[in-house]
Amino acid sequence: MIKALMKKISKPAQATTEEVEMTEQEKATFAAAETKAAELTVALEAAATTLAEKEAAFAALTEKYNAAEAALAQSAEAQATLVANAKAAVLTARTEKLSAIMGDVKGPQTAVSLESLDDEAFATVLSSYAANFEAESKSGMFSEKGVAAEAAPVEEVDAVTRLAANLAAQFKSK
Image (tube, rainbow, N blue to C red; front, side, top):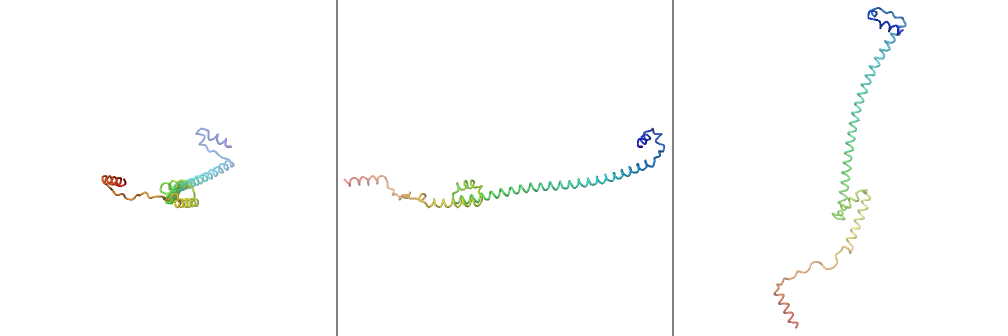
């Protein structure tokens, strides 16, 4: 049936001007094909509209995702800065506490070496250092014993007076 139609269509131009009569079955098939083509066209247009809507929604979600990712990166950066500042503040406070006990040379060195301790462990170490330094300062090892390093002022006597006094002392004793 379709072959017959194709033969009629493929004839030279003069043959196409003739009217072709279709059977009832061919008319029904043609009408069904036209209906199906119209339905498919409507479905294609609906799918194209839906696709455009989905693409717009996807673009909006992608934009939101990128914004959220940027905010997350910024938040992580801010958190890292806060953590670094907190660690620096803790180290500074610990350095001051240790310097008060040990002095300005050993205090900072010891603070850096104890940086990894939590606050409770550091407090224990600090109290131990304080007790040890206090005990050492009160022990006999660190207290001054003996004569004072300063002598009594000496009267200045010129050389001639001293020589005369020495000679007088020698001759008196003989």
